[in-house]
Image (cartoon, rainbow, N blue to C red; front, side):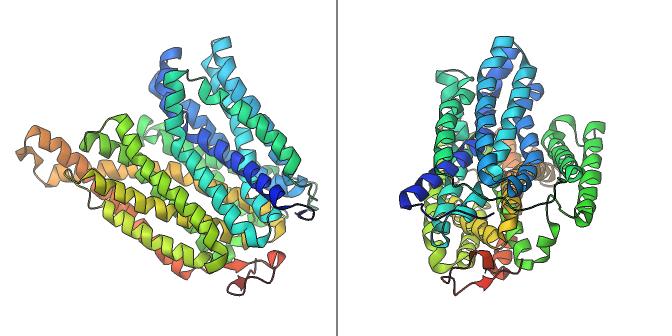
Length: 496
């Protein structure tokens, strides 16, 4: 993908960053904004909680299945076409979600509209990091990626808060309708500021088999993980879906290694640094999922806070993430991505270790301190790791690898929540069977059991954080020759 940086002034670059940031924010926001409105939607349509959860599940499944496909397509037809088309689909889908279900009195219409919206979300999410690599000068890449990744993380973090306000004071329809004016603005802005690009020459035949395999495999895997607790991990549906995921993903790997123009170039992972940096990204979001899922339960069940107060306490993580994300963007070109990743790994280990010390009587200030340390480490890690991944591959792989980094953000979140829930339950069962809790008072039994679940889950996150730090210590920063500008003396030339 050849960029067109000539003739773009600083104002043009700033507008371009705003356009990409809006895309990252909207797609991330819609991954979490809906959950808090599900009880209201359930009441309106007279549905069970398991049925109404499809409003969130379908978005995740379609995003997971489509993101790699659109990343590959963008390498062939150009970023601008995919980006703007994605915004059109996302905006129309949002309007449909907010208007048609009530108009037609049909819940399936809401699920279908949500799936259509997710197609647009996958298109704009898949190529946002690639557009930074393609259009932003090397000396500004760190800052740009820092802003965009911070905005995306903010969208994920504040989704429940915005969703709650809109649902309580307006209606649940507005969690979708709010996207319409923002999407229209972003569409016109993108059309104006995104440079025209010259697509790479690729074979006429798109890897349809690979696209079908990856869509089926990822959608099946995430469905099984997200619904396993509800339907039962040994139920025929879950076991069958897991088997389907294993078969299709295994065949996808074999297929991609044989096909001439693969959907995902798996040979990229032969490079040790590329492999380790992608593992870092995946594990960071995997470990973060456990914290984001379990902490509200800790604050409400153990500490006795209400939902609003718990949400206020959790904003400490978002604030710290925003600050460190911007800081990482400013420091990236000065100290290098590897140094930032190592520093972030140290903070992450410290933060998760502090989480293992949480008890029934832990002061709220200590909980906030834990969140600040973890949030700071996440923002400090995500920006340089994303840059290191994108800058280590040639321009011909920008869209493909960009979509890979997007997949590594939200797929591990789903897997991490399921893992944290399983570990939490195992911790409760372990202390119930070995520590004689029946000798305690009834009120103390509840707190002892719940706290044991949190202890085990947070300890597992601490172990994952140590692994992340080890990977950061051994990973090197590489700059592909396509992006060499003579200002990167302390980094190694990419070999991908």
